[in-house]
Image (cartoon, rainbow, N blue to C red; front, side):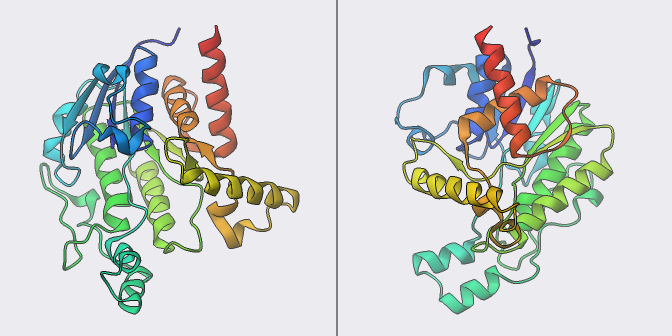
Length: 289
């Protein structure tokens, strides 16, 4: 039996984060979730508005990822810290979709080559907050996908946490700015090179689906079809379609893979779709014993 561990899931009240918490609770682990709002709005992450029974075993804490001093004490004595925070769409992209911003203005800003994140997180002083560099304080890919991850990894390392999991992504897609995936890759490379003593695990799943979010099911269906076609032609569509032709994965499967990876000291570095499935299958077999 896997030894009991203490894990901290930043973004633990989200779609994937809540399932990581659930999987850890099922192992009997000590689980703390950190987010701005605390406990999830359950109807947004499950098919029911009511808290599931396992949720009472999680410590739902509130903190601000831009203010490390608000979460640093919660990392003490943790065996692993998980970064399950990020944004898929930036505010100007959302503004176009909701009609609050002009198509030209919003998309030109969304697809700009660069945007500001925070000050260099590697040069941040003890207790210093992350300061958004965009003039309107926008939460950019650089800030949320990259700088909060680097900062969290640094804080975890300072607390002697042995393992860090970053929920990255398999690839970008043509409908998203390239910066969505480049900021995640920047986070991976910076954490790996700057914190070599930290066992860093970079999970790269494709599209995540679950029956509780019915809109994800048809997307997953077409994604699976695209993945099979891409596989049959030797992956020649990957450069064009990116994550759109990566095999979609059930969110619960990815959550199980995260917990299995934390418990297996041999797992480190990049973990792609095939390895995610292998870890989840290993967890399933463990549960059957």
